[in-house]
Length: 72
Image (cartoon, rainbow, N blue to C red; front, side, top):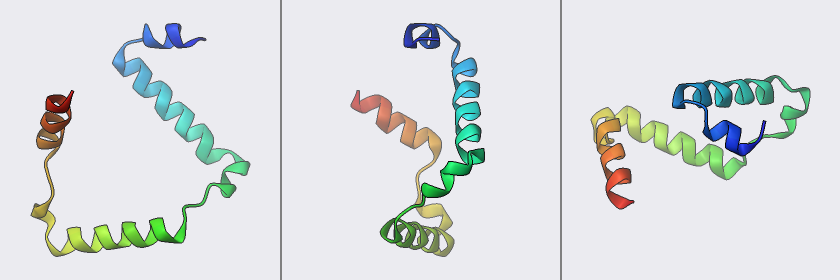
């Protein structure tokens, strides 16, 4: 299946394909080598802590989508 074939799929079908690919990566024994860096772990911890302190401080999906769409 080439890129042209993939782009002819519906959005739903492409999402299922991405999920299947992700699941195959996670279940691959070689995926153990795909660890995140300590800096990334620290940043994720920092963001989680910030979210837990103030869960309403983030943006809703609608706000994020509007910003992304507007910037195109």
